[in-house]
Image 1 (cartoon, one colour):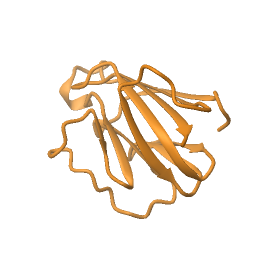
Image 2 (tube, helix red, strand yellow):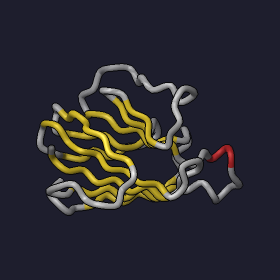
Image 3 (cartoon, rainbow, N blue to C red):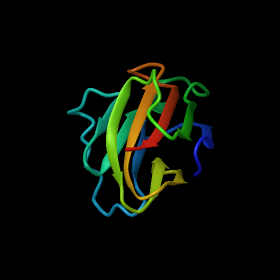
Length: 131
């Protein structure tokens, strides 16, 4: 994915989270949602962004808008930041039902994430920039 290209998805995330990991990550998912305070939880191998769970809202109110873009450097105004290693140069973003693969340069990246509601996010913005 070249700089300033975007991925935009609008759909329910039936597990109540958007998962982010290196495409070649072989480690089992290692985030315990019951221990974290969200909306962004992370370990060395995985990131999860908690979003509205379809089982907690009326039908038709579970869609989440995910906007992802790559920038050449850190941007201002996003609430959550974390460094993240992408050794394969491919980042998976999605859930068990569907995901997008974003092509990056292999290495260390800054993930910046913002949500509209920390408890039941329906708007998620993510910007990735090289470190």
